Image (cartoon, rainbow, N blue to C red; front, side, top):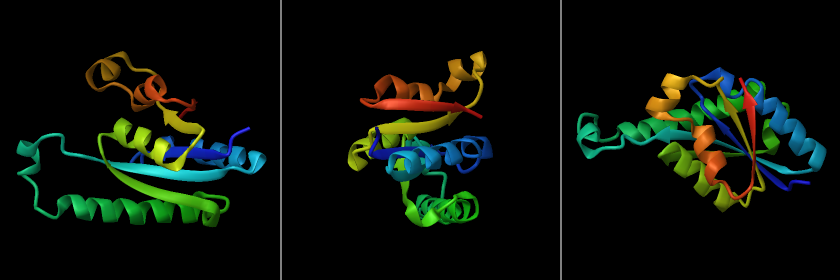
Length: 143
């Protein structure tokens, strides 16, 4: 049914992958699909904010995210060798949508916390943003 699956993970929140990683792996195995896993290091969003950090801060955060993703998949994935890893940088939902296009994924799997009206109003939900803009199906797994 699906040939390429993109799973998005927030490395700082185990709830984003505890249920979603096994579910995505099972779907990929059942359908013989390629599983891509993406984590995103958010951008500063402002040059003024970026100026307050050391010049190599973003590079170090990307390296840290890459190591953390490798460690997580090695420890928690059923077969980490079959997973294609991606570390992105920028506005989270924009990076997810770009990676979706770049990989040719025909399904996105994401975790989401239970709705919280105040949080949704202030910062929104990445899963909601992706689901509204995605040209392919999005499976949202509640953490």
